[in-house]
Length: 135
Image (tube, rainbow, N blue to C red; front, side, top):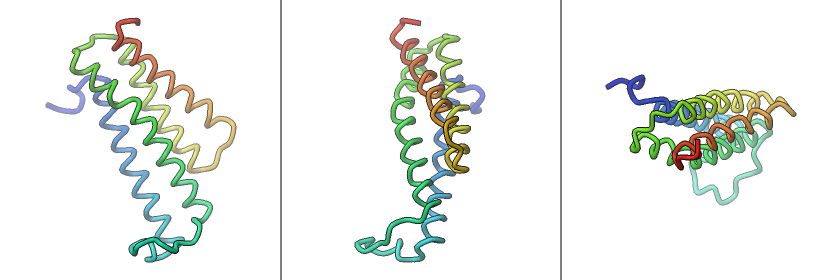
């Protein structure tokens, strides 16, 4: 089985998880570049993060929140064998908006980022409604 055969919901979940791995790697690299190897210790007396490192911490936290809401719904849609255009479209909206949101966050683009975040949330709600049999 390939990722394309998983269905839109699980495929989006796999790719969104891959995005999280990339974001965590960038976050960790930014931390080591900013604060050095103190991060490899107990972290009891770590100075405040630099601007980019702090931004990466926020984007990882934000993406983790999105995955926490979307993941169980994507799995439920898959287990239920939903053949729902609403769920598939919602999953695609979630994934593409999360990629765009991460890039906008990383590059510090204001005002547009919350709108893109809202598109991802709307996609998650679409999958929820499909799982609940409402859409």
